[in-house]
Length: 240
Ligand code: VGL
Image 1 (cartoon, rainbow, N blue to C red):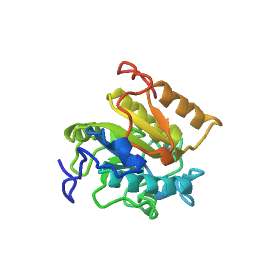
Image 2 (image 1 turned 120 degrees about the vertical axis):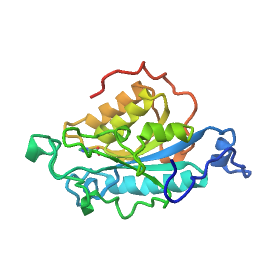
Image 3 (image 1 turned 90 degrees about the vertical axis):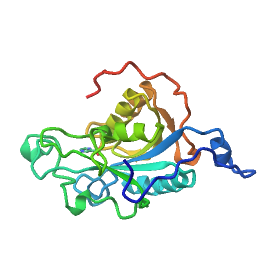
């Protein structure tokens, strides 16, 4: 299925201009890829119910990446936490977290400074009262298509990931993407973590790398390489 606003633009080939290193790097790129922006919602940003330190910088850097991804013709996905008011994800009902990203509240809106294009594909997750819904791969598009199926239908084999939070939704999304056989690049300067326990974000980065994610910085933004430095492990491992 397609986004309501129409068919996303795919690149089959990007014409390079002399001296344009990004375009040069992408000329050989005929595989489809996407940028996945994870949970850049008001409640995870400054002033929100579960504000992640460093979120403002993440917004700035993701905006640059969104601009670059659009220029290169990539599909852009934006995941969002979309919780019911009562869920065992929240401390009030036996879980860990303060109430956040409740459906139809401003805390669940994307950060107003995030430059999502109108044809960005929103992936909604966390609607189940009994599940945390950390991973964007637990989510679905507005047409009800699970993220993995949507990527498959569009022929997308590689994704670039940034957003919030490193040690939860980014980590789970990246590990699920790797398990699904995708090539994954994490924008390590466009993510920020909760660090409920000191060092959680560092450990999450290590885990993502160990499972085959390629780490890069937004200044070096380019479509993810076809080959991961480490092959993904066999599917079915538990990374809860
Ligand atoms: C998240 C903590 C609780 C996240 C969601 O988006 O990473 N973190 N719920």
